Image (cartoon, rainbow, N blue to C red; front, top):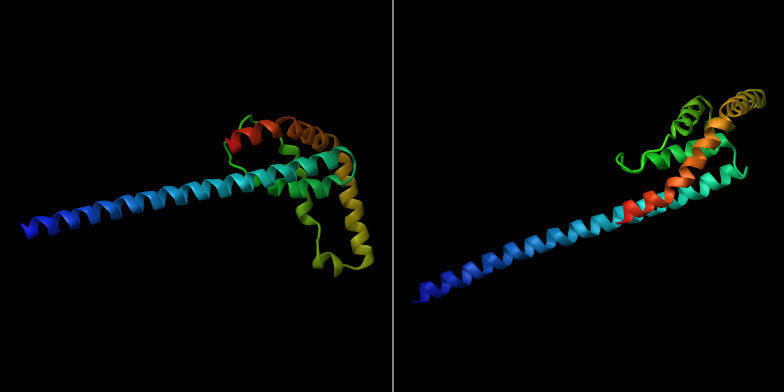
Length: 150
């Protein structure tokens, strides 16, 4: 009789442990989904601010493209609706050859001026396509936000 009681208690503990582990995993996944949704929300906000600033001429297209390309890479590849933002990525990649930060500070004034002129020429060539892509981005951000948060 006592063995049956011990066996029942052990079975109850085992079932409780399994249920506890399942609840723990469910809560961890839920928290991870909430963290990912919050990160996507911040990315969307940053993309909205950058694209609006670019369209209003408040930021150079090279700077905006570099930042937006990084942010766009933080979003899932299956974000829908699909929109052509290749111009943003192309300008960002083209700007990889220019020095930034401390490397830029180490340049001589003549080298810095040469890079600035090359960047301005590149921006002038690609600016219409980048502005069009920023406009398309503005149009879909609301839809992306709704799909990624829901």
